[in-house]
Length: 420
Image (cartoon, rainbow, N blue to C red; front, side, top):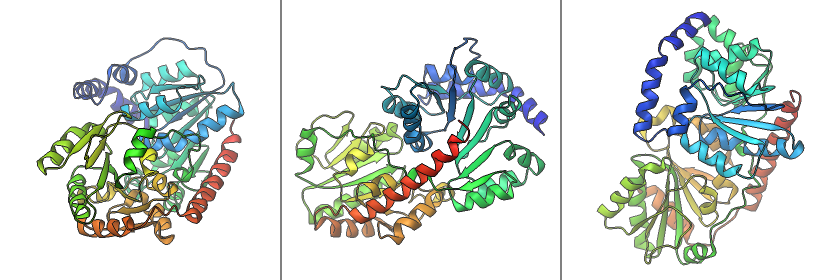
């Protein structure tokens, strides 16, 4: 099966070049990502003592930021290569590690044998860590051929993913047996990995509970003073179709509080212009906030057009709606990470489709931190109730989450240090 996969990926490589080029034309790739994903870079880099960590996009990358910072702090000679797939994740890496000379970012090349060999020859990692559900057979096979330790960290194998791998029979067993250790991000994943015959499987907890304590950036005093004049709530990580509901919610809240300010932070910021038009069509005064500049007078809706700024705004919101949870056709992949908002003491609302974070939401709902809503009426009623008082920072709940996250962090580091 390996030989078939290797042959097939080599065969379709020209098609992959075309697909990535098309993505470049529609601004989902840039010149650098296009080159690094498909080119054969023969440049030799003298990097010793290198740990390579790979995560696909923003969520995976943000989950390992505290771990990377810890490893660098513990050993200032430790080199960390982080690879990712999306432009947005690259921006997060550049922002978080701009002052870290030991951290290097590269885009993840497509899983084609000759590119795999070229990549590994270039970087020569001593340890490889794949995050979440990043399973790439050509890479995994070649890494183990070179006797490099291989870890699957914060593993996520959903029911759908499990069924797909299970249908591959012996091939899936060969793939998952290549990992030296698999640290599951949920109990469901733990059991799915065992069924797939992965070895050395452990469940420590979801890395997304770990707080990025070094992320101390805040809004400017001008913005803060302006926000304090409003009743503020936030809709975060929204997807297409959810902004309409948020606008309806805003209009309902406005009947009670004239000085309502709604902050919308779409999951894909390239959509801000279309959301801005949506607001204008409803007669609402909206502003796209591309940088930390002053708010317009009598503003009603802010559209945040920057990456990695969620926590800045959560600090000044009593209530937060977390998106990718109201769209029916995303039911099997629904949900975005609500933990950042919880750690800022916000009351969290979400729709019924949170499959990717169902264990997290179960924990938050048990502690009365989050609540399911089904429409704009329910959301507006809850937020109006929240806005009647001052922000309740839920110190006890925050401490509980922080303690849980610290234990996950400590136990994860302990497992990683066995391979460093």
